[in-house]
Image 1 (cartoon, rainbow, N blue to C red):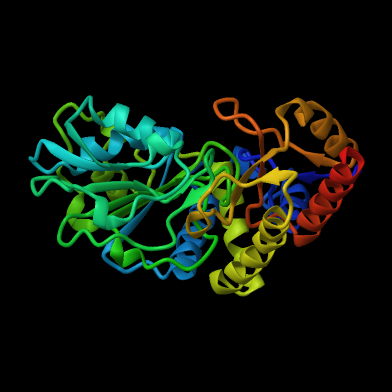
Image 2 (cartoon, rainbow, N blue to C red; image 1 turned 180 degrees about the vertical axis):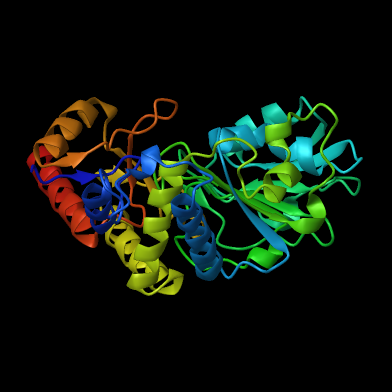
Amino acid sequence: MTKIYNFSAGPAVLPQPVLQQAAQELVDWRGSGMSVMEMSHRGAEFIGIYEQAVADVRELMAIPKNYQVLFLQGGASAQFAMVPMNILRGKTRADYVNTGQWSKKAISDAKKYCQVNVAASSEAQQFNHIPAQAQWQLDDQAAYVHITTNETIGGVEFHWVPDTGDVPLVADMSSHILSRPMDVSRYGLIYAGAQKNIGPAGVTIVIVRDDLMGHALPITPTVFDFKVQADNDSMSNTPPTYGIYIAGLVFQWLKQLGGLSEMERLNRAKAAVLYDYLDQTEFYHSPVARADRSLMNIPFTLRSAELDAAFIKTTEAAGLMQLKGHRSVGGMRASIYNAMPIDGVLRLVEVMREFERKQA
């Protein structure tokens, strides 16, 4: 097997022990004679997988009892519509903070269901920072405040939790969920696509406070109603069973590793390796304000964009894959999610140093 390090922003690298266990159980899950992909979602085998996954993520994230955990479909992008559909609760306005491309998409969809107040934005500065809360202009009639806590494309991350008082805080945590401990009780609703830190594409986790359910707009399709899904254990329709199974294996891997505090320690160590190098060279540049740098997605540029193609060719030859930046911003991006070992980041810096030396 060719040894590579996969820096893809998503679908992203998965833990090797998880992939190995899934491979062993692919055809015959623990003597059942069936693959998990073949199991009825109503059968005892899959119900056990599902219940264990829910229990493990509740433990890992210390999710309070008055929150429901849902495993849904449609990716985080479906939540751009499902959030306003479900939690406007008779109101017609909502606050959004615009910190990047995914915030913009959430804002665009929300406008179909309510009046959106963009409480703060860093777009004029090319999304290179998180606006300080003192700059926010919140609407006192807003049903909720929405933030994207880690922008995958721009590489900015909330390292603090906004204070929104009694107004529910809603967070798209797709690209850094499970990367460190987070106080779930500070949020009314958290959602995240699985394909970065949870599992394969096709699963979306939604963590929603009980009092925010049961208020869906009349136009809301049944399968998009949080209360309906919660009442049916995420099985109002057939759930993404195999994705939930893989997510459950990832949760168990995180527990065996030592939980989210240990995961944060490892993630900070990995990020420091790359950021420390970027800060001491003039050949490469990090565009993000230091206080708001993501631990998961690290964009950077070279001295000249004319060198980009040669850099990608060099890194791919070294087994460092998917480092090209998003098409909307260019440059490079190293996504170093939970499953990326520190050896991969060390190897990346080694190759970057050598490329710089040869271009000097």
